[in-house]
Amino acid sequence: MIKKVDHIGIAVADLQKALKLYEETLGIKCAGVEEVAEQKVRTAFLPVGDTEIELLESTDPTSTVARFIEKRGEGIHHIALRVDDIKTALEKMKAAGIRLLDEVPRPGAGGARIAFLHPKDTGGVLIELIERG
Ligand code: CMX
Image (tube, rainbow, N blue to C red; front, side, top):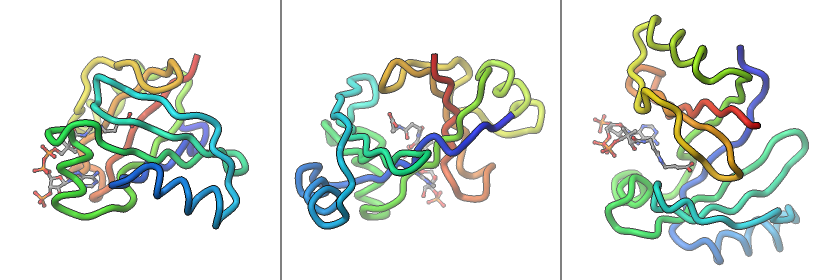
C-alpha cells in the first residue's frame, strides 16, 4: 500500500532563516514555496534524492503548526507516506482501529490529496497519507 516516503515535514519558526540553513549550509535547493491557506501554513519543498523535506511555517497563531512549536519546539512534525489510492488506504486504517484526523482526504500543497492519522494511534508519529495526481 505504501509506495515511498513522500516527504518529511519539519516545523520551523522562521521560514527564511530555515531556508538559509537548508540551502546555504546544507546545499539543498528549494523547489518552491506555497501557502496552504486551509492549514494556515507556508511550506517550502526541498527535494532530496527520491524524497523531499517540507519546511512548515505557521501563518496564524492558532494553526496546528504554531501550537506544535509552542508545546514541543521546532523539529520533525510529520512523515508523509505516498499511496496510490488514499480512499482505500483510509478505509484500511479505520478498520485497523486508527483514528482518522481526516475522514475525507483534503487538498494539500502541489495539488495532492492528503489525510492525517492520529499520532496517539501511530506510536507518537503524526503520519500523513498522500496521493498525488
Ligand atoms: N507529532 C506527534 N505528536 C503530536 C503532534 C505531532 N506533530 N502534534 C501533537 N501531538 C501530540 C501532542 O503532544 C499531544 O500529546 P499529549 O496529550 O501526550 O501531550 C497530543 O498529540 C494532542 O495534541 P494537542 O496539542 O493537545 O492537540 P492539537 O489540538 O494540537 O492536535 C493533532 C494534535 C495531531 C490532532 C493536530 O495537530 C492535527 O490535526 N494535525 C493534522 C493536521 C496538521 O498537522 N496540519 C499541518 C501540516 C499541513 C501540511 O503539511 O500541509
